[in-house]
Amino acid sequence: MMRAPDLSGCALDDRYELHAVIGEGAFGRVYRGVDRRLGRAVAVKVIKPWWAEDSAWVERFEREAQLLARVSDAGIVQIFDIGHADEGPYYVAELIDGESLAERLRRGPLTVTEARSVAEQLCRALAGAHAQGVVHCDVKPANVLLTADGNVKVGDFGVARLAESTSQAPAATVAGTPRYMSPEQARGRPTTPATDVYSAGIVLYEMLAGEPPFAHGSPVELGLRHLQDPPQPLPARVPLALRQVVDRALAKDPADRYRDGADMAAALSADPAASATETGPAPPRSTAPASAATVVMGEPRTIDLRAPEGHDAPAATTRVARRSGHAGSPPPRPRRDTRMRRRRVGALLAALLALVGVAVGVLLLAGTGARTTVPELRGLPRGGVQARARHQHLQPLFSARYAEAPPGIAIAQDPSSGTRTAYGSTVAVVLSAGPPPVQVPGVVGQNSASAESELASAGLRYGVRLVAAPGKEPAVVTQQSPGAAATVPHGATVALSVAEAPRWRALTSFSGVDDGHSVPFRILGSRWRVSYSMAYEGTCLLLLVCLGPSAEAQNLETGSSFGGFELGEGPSETHTFDSGPGLYRLAISGGHDSARWSMTVEDYY
Image (cartoon, rainbow, N blue to C red; front, side, top):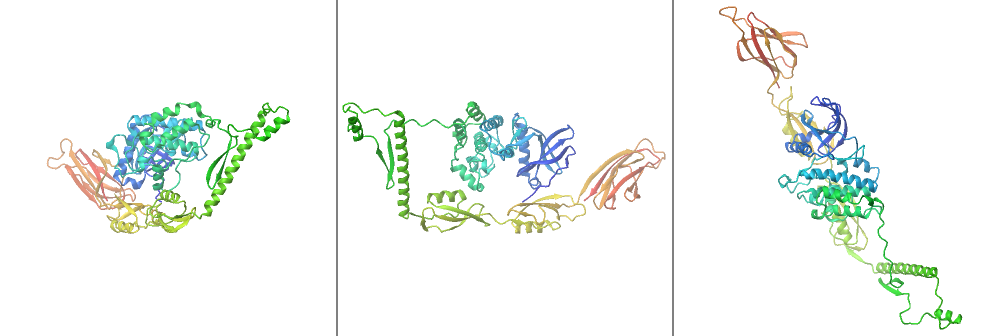
């Protein structure tokens, strides 16, 4: 797997100290840092080096910073600065003292009261973004920050989009996190504030249940489940009103959800007293006569335990009346507890008869030897395999192996399609794990053309950046990331630094009158030059010849002087040295006539 270098200990632009990594995504790495100029703690997000080679990704990074700066809301992480350092593009934001919701959820679900409060604050923060035309598009627990005083801050607008249609990505682009992705994102369709409502509903569901409704499977499988499957019911401890909020937020059709974060926040705050456990209303007491249910040959029947209307009472009742000497009078009325006992006995008898009937039905069904046909499962994602197998009353048993097919797609099955087998049988299904991982070849020192060919042959992509490389031949690879022998997924990108052709590069400039010394400068290339201008001040002492200053190069590492030359009057004069790399300075000695001069040192590499 590609790993970005840890920049802890660096100071970007000599201002922002990076102390420790506090978060990482596919696009950038976030550090805890300090702004030296203002003396305050900050969070600094630095783009990863392989993305820095792609101008489109750099533009996206800058757009994220601009979106963050555009959205002004107390519930959204505020941006302070943006810059481009040698280590890569970066932006600086406020540092949140606390933890992410993802870290909190590792300790288990939240209470109903806590979940409602976090969700309401999250939705109010999203409402601030929605009101300014920004859709987050990647709402998930890792991007929900919980401050030490219990407030919620939303960060990482890395895939955020403006709500206007002109800012939408092409329809084929799918951005977001599969576990929290809305159905329209899974389809690659335009996003709206209702997209964030769906993801906020997933987050609320996870806070209450302990995990998202669709937590397992490949990205393709998760996308299909968001499109097709209803979520499992929430735990019984969740109040009915809160379950209804989750159900509406998770509607497959955006038109059936809350319109935006403000609407969902209003729904969450409408009934704060409903945080106690809801058991639901008790079923109404039946007024129908007592009866018992049984099953005969798999069909339910009803046996009435009450004497038919208009018939005589049971004989036992008549005998009791006669024995008491009051044959003509009604029988004694049984006590209330006796009637309740009889009802309970009747209900128990009904349950027993139903159980016996179900058992008999199952045995009869098994005795028929019911069979089904194994369907074609190859080419389907995991969720599609499960759905089709369930439809045919089969149980899939999954395994995986490396293959050229996309990850998560079924590539083999046993028994094969068309086979007749018993209900409930197991079908072994092999899913593709994608192409096997690749060991990165070492290409440092090679010509860029051969390095690119070797990487392509290994099934890897590459990005090239031309860099100044003193002492290196042009077009030679000077650095690669990941390094040689690293193991990465098939199709991963290797960032290459390639030496560019040498050219003159301005190093330092200085000026003065008469005598003087330049500040020390370090030469990296094989040669360097001094471009100077000089003009006399006043009148020369001699009538025909002016005696001006001279310059001499000094090697500060060896203490030697060399390469002296006279400064001639005029602009843009040049003197070249072939002394090679080293630490140098120029000493200017005055002539007999006063003169003003200026110089620029250029290095060639």
